[in-house]
Length: 148
Image (tube, rainbow, N blue to C red):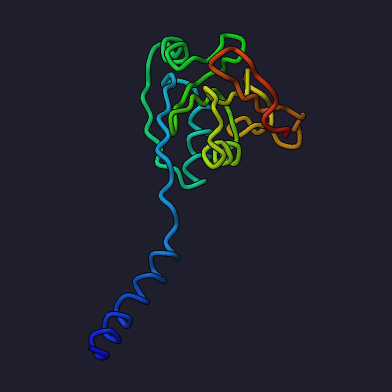
């Protein structure tokens, strides 16, 4: 009996260490964009560098996807994504998305409205004006989620 218990511990302990050391699986980010948008491609690369599995669908018009996901028109940008049941509109930093997925607020999603210089995919050298990531709710309410 003691031998069996020691054998079990000898096998289970390294497996437990491996399981604890393994990184959590990154979320799948589904991106809908137009084929010609270069800054969207740069944002996709930003997300891949953050460890996400990014799946891109090129379309003629992103608007139907944004509306289906509940993105308000005044929070729109050049591409719309979804991850973990949330809409992600525009050049939202990967760190903000990680926080959203960790905190799991009762929200529709995040947006960096417009095409803000200095946001991921819109890097413009030293010109990095401040911008905000907005969290928006299904009832239309919104607030600042992060300052950059």
